[in-house]
Length: 94
Image (cartoon, rainbow, N blue to C red; front, side, top):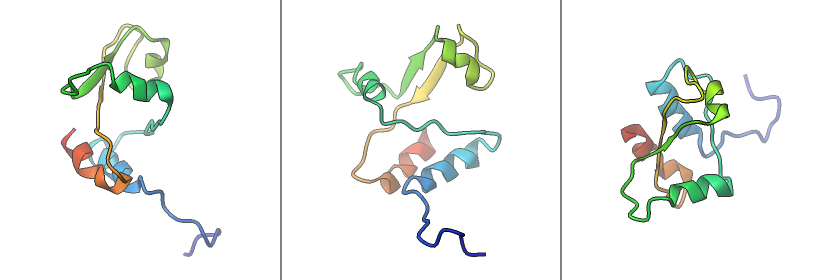
């Protein structure tokens, strides 16, 4: 069945979401951000050798799976590429 909106197309990030759901079929959402704060958080490691960003003691952790305020959440850091379709291989490894 063709889409109701004729010019509707998939996001360039769609291959990334397929990787997420392949490895986490119970995932209910994907949090994708380009916020300045998220970008700056990735710069906390000037060596750029960290593979994850660890966060804890945040109220919002209660809304992420089975986490709580004092849980440790590890968020994979995926190096940026010129286009989103080039990120799927890195995400697959994360």
